[in-house]
Image (cartoon, rainbow, N blue to C red; front, side, top):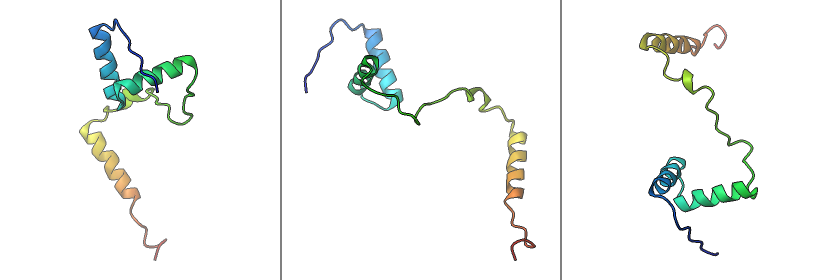
Length: 86
């Protein structure tokens, strides 16, 4: 495989690439290769690995008492009815 050197990369861009790679669990090299392939249309988006963020604002909204009430309800539903399951 060939190696390509990219000159003139600003420190801010370099840091942003490293940070993005870290967040995605990739090396900086892999991140850049993936970006280039995607831009050139060489890599198809995986059908079932798309990440959605449309419900993010709902997380962390329960108070402690609401959380306990929901947990108690779930626990009640998990109880086995002896009449149905002797």
